[in-house]
Length: 139
Image 1: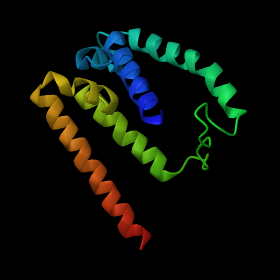
Image 2: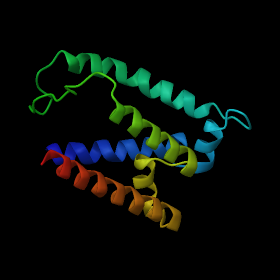
Image 3: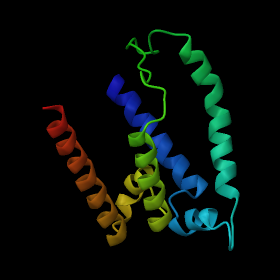
């Protein structure tokens, strides 16, 4: 049941990305182009997503278990640090250069465009590199 729920949530999320235009790098770059042909529509998508999430998140915060009976897992750390700020900067710079981020990249993999495949491979290499560095730092 957990895997089926995760699959359905992933399909719904991917469909939402496609419907909202977040899988279109040109639309994302137009949203980020504050000094040029700015397109504010993705800001409305983000505001809508935040608005839709407030109720369920507020409800979930009051529970110790998920609807499927698993323990609720919330971030233990709440303060800003160098790693969080640095990771956010790297993510934002990559998003601004490519016009794509991990969620839309996965949704776009089925298109077979070489740019999306290259982005996804680079993303996976970055994740593996991070994991290797983390393991090295824990020793």
